Amino acid sequence: QVHLVESGGGLVQSGGSLRLSCAASGTFFSINDMGWYRRGPGKQRELVVSITRDLGTNYLDSVKGRLTISRDNVNNIAYLQMNSLKPDDTAAYYCYADVTLAGGYAYSAWGQGTQVTVSS
Image (cartoon, rainbow, N blue to C red):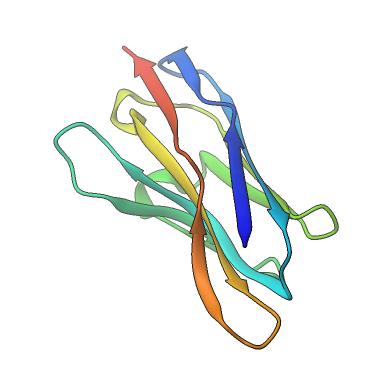
């Protein structure tokens, strides 16, 4: 099993910055894609960003140029640098990791979620 621990959320003013982390631990064969979803108040869940093991990235259009994902494959940690934050970015952010166990079983592990609140 893989356990994901998130950190770094909080309250920030519009235009401010935050950095989220997502650390994976446990026993696994490989971690493939990692990323973050978010669910804002009254909104549906949306995929914010993902990063492949080869560091290919995919961003939600509304965050391009403001949020940057990175990844440390040695320590199995993903980071999300969030700059120029807007009130619309207010949401609970959930990291995920696509995990493959020895034997080939694959599933998505999830973090506990972290709240990001951007005040205007």
